[in-house]
Image (cartoon, rainbow, N blue to C red; front, side, top):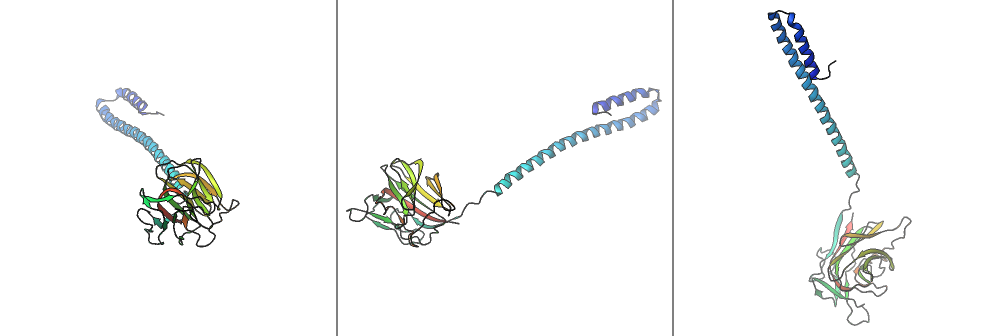
Length: 272
């Protein structure tokens, strides 16, 4: 059985040569007939070639479709991101007002507006002259099981101090700067999750912590610095001492640490 067009054509030529015994008129009629056969053979050959090309294309399309199914099925399995709801926003540019209108103004004592934020002098309040206060009221809308807090800060010295802490009574979670130049997550009043991420002086940074009820993440300038799990066999996050222990301070009333530098743009979100 011929395998391709060349073999068909060769056999056809051999057949024509063997027809020399035929009469001229008869030969003419037969050659017309053979020409039709030849056209059919050429068409058949082209059809097979097109069919082979179509099979290749079909295989490519099937492969591409399978790859797309894998990609999109993988995307559908990605865990949905939590939605965030802004429940407090204190720009701290010229006043201590919550721009959302959901919370009373911050308490700002001996805390002037400078460098586009509020200056905190690092003097612990009490009997110390010249001490300052920069604190929000209780954020009553705060979902203590799923939230995030962030605030910008500017310091001129590397030392151990809080940037912000939730709960003046329980001090249950907060963002800390360490004397070795790293950032840390304060939890349960005196425990720390230390990190290797460093901050720099004389420039603005963003200090953020998010908590989803299981894991607390600490970020510096939107970069993850560390994570800590709570509950389910891990240490428990004590949470607020009372329902109103949701104020945000720049002072640690447990050990007397007070922030020295500038702060602005305090934002509090509930995560859903």
